Length: 288
Ligand code: G1P
Image (cartoon, rainbow, N blue to C red):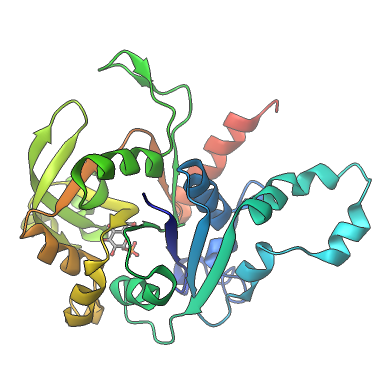
């Protein structure tokens, strides 16, 4: 069982300056909902109710978001706008949120290691909130003639239950974009569920050095031995401790499965992806 989801949320969000000068990038809204709330909802849909959030300086708005605002509740109680708080209230009631700070910015691997204190010795999920994922009911799974409406994390948990090792979500990207992602190579295990046994992984390779165009997106299920590996992992690409490098150590023992997820992903860490997500969700929600 996967019971906890870790959200690394300490990054500066420099691509969104000046918006992110005093606002955490995870709090930027797609329509009326901050990015991190979409992530938390995806975790809940996957049956997870314990959220572990790795923050940093200037990220307090995240804690306030997942808490009651008595003044606000009092102001809008009984009014026509009260329903706008329904979703977030439900999350606050259903879930627990705990926080720890990444004191120094030493990369995603280091951020995940900082979360060890909240996770303990059990397998856990990781969501990078700036990869906004959705699997809307209209997406037809034509291969199997069925409709798959499960969220990406939910799909990954099913894969984890089968393989009992670390799982990364992947998507094919244009070859000239491999330097934006962790990239994997692997052997196809099961064509019907799009799983690969990972044999190699490289963080943000130049297209000429990339083993494939299969890019890791911001969803992981990690087994807890990853923490010991991360402790030993030397800084890699850009001088940062990379989760990709730590996962490679597991992959060398055949313990990483890559899963081509069903659904859509928007790179909300970039302005283009953010605008695409906004347009997509606007069109999906029209008329609601
Ligand atoms: C991180 C990871 C990278 C992964 C990406 C997914 O990079 O280091 O391997 O492909 O997330 O979004 P970042 O986007 O934080 O630079």
